[in-house]
Image 1 (cartoon, rainbow, N blue to C red):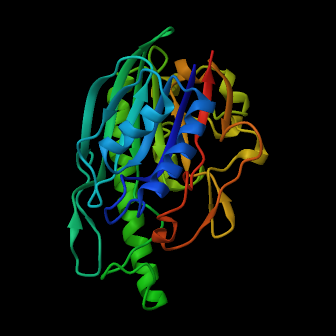
Image 2 (image 1 turned 135 degrees about the vertical axis):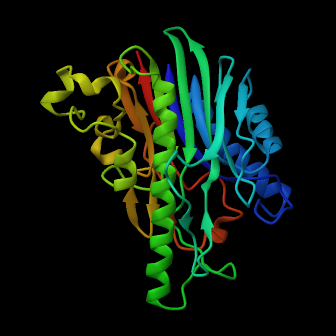
Length: 314
């Protein structure tokens, strides 16, 4: 079975403030997205930036076949949300934006305003595969692409850039802590006994502090001697599959010309030892556009600015 995650990049029907400007551009985008989904043929795929449920339905109609869909009911201010599409039925276990207990609201802008929850809901589902129950949490953490008061994407000065970079980091760290709390619930005390994956657009790379928060007890990383040696931390750990992705394809977006892996799949102990392959994109050359500070420049572009990240489970 192929398990994956993909940011669909502003999946809206045409005519609104965020989606393609006309039907032709929309249909071109759907065709490009559908070609990737068809090539991957996922059993379960976490998706991000679903702006309208109807647009996701259009995409799956273009792909064809029978799909089960679960979407978060907690979008952000632009209406984008996370979801899961699956070849097997889905049961929603949680849909939440709440910060973890004891985490206080964090500052979000120069006015001193605070936020007390994630910008977009985290969705947790369960589906039954041939190997048994699989629990999936999908998330889209606070972006590193900064925005400023007045809907600006460029700062007035470097002081403002630094402050808003810090505010974004505060929020992403609090969101990662909340996502880790959700993962603890899904692990149910022992990831050695349950197939659990946490996946999505984490908006930072493997060694970033916010990504590392999600892993749990340190040690036993893939590629180290500890990986094959059981210890007490295995019950609570999640493993990032990034080291299993071939080095020349270990990226899911290009930011100002720099390749970065910001979309991740983390797995429980029971699941990670059944991963037979990991990758990004589909067969052939991995082609992605380079994105800049203003996401509006890609409004009418086909496909997505992210590559899917996937693992094959044996």
